[in-house]
Length: 167
Image (cartoon, rainbow, N blue to C red; front, side, top):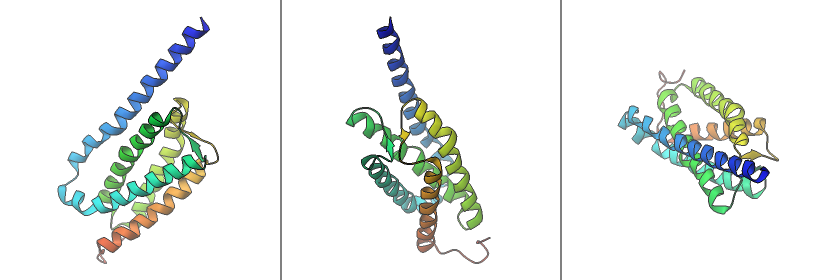
């Protein structure tokens, strides 16, 4: 009976992981609502954000800042789902909506990072998608806010802001 219960929990966990992957990847449907001009303008910073995120993700796994459950294939899929799923899309949306308004950009990133670090990571930990070990939620916010500022500076280099845009 215990073996059957254990199998049921494993199946539920696999199903939840697949649902999370699907939702994260399907969020890309919203890109249709971003003007093509904005996509062209912000795709370089979005690619840089993805490269930073994938680098930080693999460094974090290597140094055991967090743990991604499963074999090598499952871990890779879980990391890539986040890196090519919600993070670059969020970057694209935030730049589209806030670039040129620095404090709004900072606020949007801060709220985005708070939402990810607390409720979303809690859900991901509960379904054993990812688990923070030597890293905590505040570290997550500090790291992501730091590189969001670097990304903003990079975008300013690519697209200088006029005086009346910056507020």
